[in-house]
Image (cartoon, rainbow, N blue to C red; front, side, top):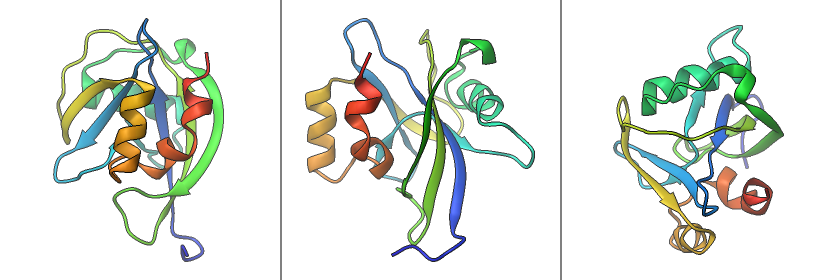
Length: 137
């Protein structure tokens, strides 16, 4: 059980390609794949955070007005034991990406591949628990 107050405010992107595959990333030194995104800075909105994080992590320039809010979701944190995440999730357009900053890997994964990652314990709880909502078009 997560301790009260041990919550990370984050924003994440659902980016789908034309074939319905979702872009997932893995941070250096971790095993879990998740949507691109990151922690909000003080006073930062979820959309502003996501624009910043997509540029920092993937060299992907997405204007704030191009983000479609999907909702606010919570789950146990993938890489911080005892913490949970409170996440603003947005659908974002894709484009050419370059893995950089703290990312080790990015991949396009089908629903079946994502379920395989989940079965192997390699998909972040936020993504695993909301996969159907995130893949809906």
